[in-house]
Amino acid sequence: MSKRSVLLVDDEPMVLLALERILGTLLDCRVVKAEDGPQALAILEREPFDIVVSDMAMPGMSGATLLDIVHELYPRAMRLVLSGRSSRDQGLSTVGSAHQYFLKPGDVSAISRRLKNVLALRELLPPEGLGTVIAGVDTLPSCPEIFRELEEEINKPDASAEAIGRIVEKDVAMSAKALQLVNSSFFGLREHVSSPVRAVVLLGASLMKSLVLAVHVFSSVPKDDPLAAFVRKVWTHSLHVATAAREIALFEKAPPALVEEAYIAGLFHDIGKLAIAMNLPDARGHIEETLAERELADAVAERETLGATHAEAGGYLLALWGFSDAVVEAAVFHHQPSRSGKKAESVFPTLAAVHVANAFDHEKEPARHAPNAAPDTAFLQNAGLADKPAAWRAAIGG
View (cartoon, rainbow, N blue to C red):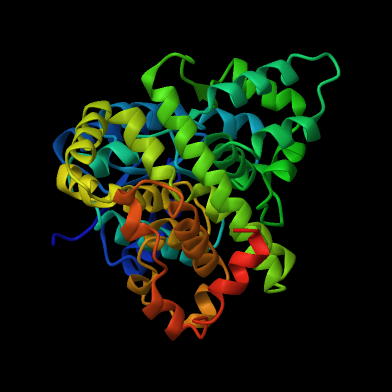
């Protein structure tokens, strides 16, 4: 495997030198520097980069403009913004082009750890095709009915942020974008927000209206589009798993933060299906044909068609968007948690709750889901949870 490469773009030479030294060491990567946007684009024309890190406020071409171009021409690259100040307006200008937004000076070692995790997850995807597509995703389709409900609420003269949040928390795509935005450094929050309702309250009703009507961060598909039926199916299953995972965490008397995390991880565990369906419609069609012809689990048909599954694609997307390791792991390993290689205490309740909740919900589906309907007994045994599923089933009313 060739050495990873990072392109740093900043008009302050001392900042470039500091970032070059720290990132190069911690990521064990090759670092190339550029002092402005045009120079960065000239370098990108000559060679590809795994990561592009750009300052926000540069003379001439801004970081937002540069990353817009990188997003369009080099979608496989991970795109990060560094800024000297937190600003909602600045952050919103990069909402479609930057994967993550950091303040400087910041904890570069923490940034490096996050980047290393993202790059490790990318190794699970084919180098071309699906990996490139996922890195280029900036929005996902929402359930048409939920999106219409959101539009109606934000257009009310007395629109309430909490009422908007209650709508958002029911939808996979909306919740993901709201949490990605509110946890970005441009908001300058000292706490990590894991509740979609709280995220929307912090964003505010007016900003949510702008995100829907002007910036188009949230989107939907026409009600009669075949994709709409698929989105509804993913939405229904994800909501069931999220609710059940939360009930399992509550049954185990997990701390409130972990209860919320279990819900979010359950809601997002199949987010890779939405990314594939929206951006690779031909592949989705081929997968559906394969499933109709042969009794296979979805993941088997996906790997045959794409070289990877929705679980890996979804985990990579969530990592790109800056979600916690626990939420990312629940997406990647929700079918086979034993593959996580994590110790029992580091995966419960999030991964365990999502895995079992997902298996329970798949029991209600056609026979081709049978491989997904059986909890991973080896994982549960290793985690000391082998006797728990029966009690959890009772707790969620399954």
